[in-house]
Length: 395
Ligand SMILES: Cc1ncc(COP(=O)(O)O)c(C=O)c1O
Image 1 (cartoon, rainbow, N blue to C red):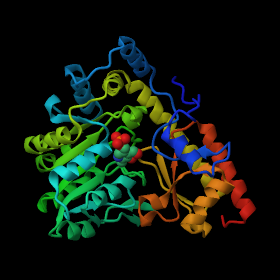
Image 2 (cartoon, helix red, strand yellow):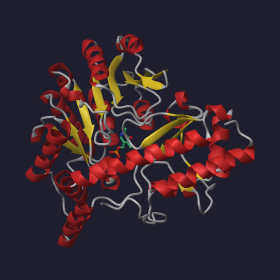
Image 3 (cartoon, rainbow, N blue to C red):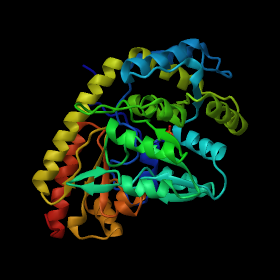
């Protein structure tokens, strides 16, 4: 049994979640953060041991992904995801977001169109814009309380003459969908026909709850594999984001050559000594810990959804198929996005990622990070209940 209950104090150590909360200037002493996608949990003990050993060496020079590291990555892809990856098909970058930026610059020109599916992770909006590309939105649609892709719209948008690339979020942050093989096949069929390069961001690929099964985009077909870049990392699954290490897997040789050249041009061959060690340890020794984490997160989801439904029957909580980020619709409160944010921080003392951050489709929604001790969730639901009662908000 691993420990998912002990809280380390992350205030004043530069932890982004807590620093952002303090910088907001609105945080009382007992505010609870449910923002930013890292976990409050301590990582798997074998990873900590591997890092201790590396630290003991006391020499932290330039480091490369060695054979053992690459073999750990490939074995993980094979055993966990039924995906055959060769060591030389991987490129290490300092994060998946960095890799998306590199891919945008390597494979598209200014003005080219990049497809995204809002509501979606904020850098998917930001990176095309900051690189002066044109954002093409193919919004997700709600059907019977479930988010789905709008394939007719995707077909139209992919056919636009300037459309060159698609940023796919799989599993999807923030709506929590694990795309089915059938859905992904339709995406690949459309993108391949229109020569759209797909960057499939699969950073959450290990965080999937049965009966849902993650399908790696590159395993769909030869055509899909030849026209995609897959972003992976151990960072979400094992809480290693601060170690800035990810594996970008590109099985088309020419695409990989171009991506690698752009990576070296922009960032050199720099890899993080500790990040490589932690990722290798995670993939070699972390499977049991991850399985327990998934059970704990799954129970967190059930617990919190039950409480929200009990206190707020008119708030829609979307089923979490993957990720630890729960998406909920608070439009029944009748508040503007700014009022909702203020209510959450000031009345309920909860610091959340506001839905609007993921695109206008998220107005009136909130994203809760469930990777925290369960008692936090109980407290959060009770606070929400009391705050809504005091304000006389509709239930
Ligand atoms: C879909 C998605 N991609 C990428 C990231 C961050 O990746 P990295 O820290 O490797 O840049 C996140 C973090 O929340 C995410 O949700």
